[in-house]
Length: 562
Image (cartoon, rainbow, N blue to C red; front, side, top):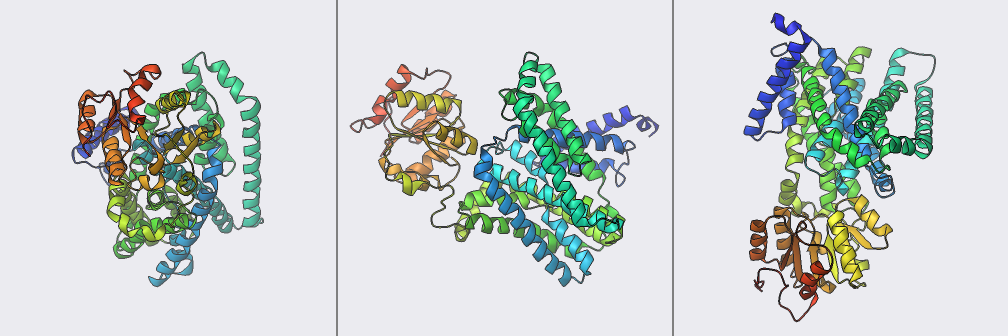
């Protein structure tokens, strides 16, 4: 083992073990997050004990957190705060209050003292921003409505946990100043930080980024430096590093280079996050778990089932659809690394004992592991539970559905997917005198369409209830500009299931999949890399708007079966 006293050999060994365990995990269809936490336990003091340089791994982990939150902030359109800020704040605070209250009651029922019950209850309220953001990114759901809401209330949770830790630290230190005074100081510092960042966004950052735009290497280097610097400033001011890094990303989100920066950061982000999960596994003290199995199972079930239930209720009352509420609720179905930090602080201050620390650690292991699967298979779980979730949805989920308002309007075509290709399709149709309605699961894309004077609404092509939110009776053609075969096939089936007898036009890149969609009932297939969106494109679509035509031109001559 002498070789592993060399930090370079140590790092090499950890990387090889991570690659092997990750490969086994993929073979067994296990999430990489769970595999890498397992690597941390394996190389940590409860396994092979290879981590001599734990401080270096911890530093790399913190860099990974900063880059991840920066990348998320970078994708956040400030206009979305108007549409998701209220629900994020109310859901975040509501979930913290309800979970704390019921968690405290359960802890008292187990015979814990008042102080211990308070620590356990508060530890149950915080969810892992890092893990959720990573999972949503992997599923490409960060830009979805439920993804944006989830990130919003997770950031609210992060701010709350910082304030709680300040309060407990001041309480334990016995300082002359009151906890309320310390919290007020931090809040003032926060407003000061926001003001400075706002001024930089207005007068400095756009010009600086433009100056660096000629060299992508320098621009990315500046972006990383900016992210880490604001993370450090946030930590110095008494906030978490996550909040500082997130604000760094938001400050550059309005620049024209954000997509370039975001794309260049992806590989670096994923590499550094490996160390976060390894560090999390290595720091788990398994010796403290001991006799806490029974209460840990009860608290874990409360977190896995109760927390999403609370979010479902709050978002349902606010007028969101059960699908959006359910998918967002799964984001709080685990406890956070902050919960373990909070417990460690309580242990240090003498407020809780080793057994309580072990209980919170075990709840963390159970909930992080199981919630990872719940989020990865969230759509399948929703489809299974959907009939039971209707009680959490208003008859008119007004936050997302515009169907009653739209029933009075006439549209020639609905375009699903408002990205670059969807915009080009819409422009061509509008030039031809067609009235277009747009649908997308990205609130930012919907907002941009509305600013152009177009009608658009939130909607997910994978949502079985999507047709119920659309004015199908008066629409002649539905066009999906999404290129995913499975999503298009699902969309085709659910629209036909709702007795829509108009034309359905789908998008594909491969001829083989296009033929399958035609055979399944699609009227026409668009090929983005072949079709020139213009005269030729419209010529192919003309028959789709003709009521006398059974099907569209350019569909390989096959008629849709009635």
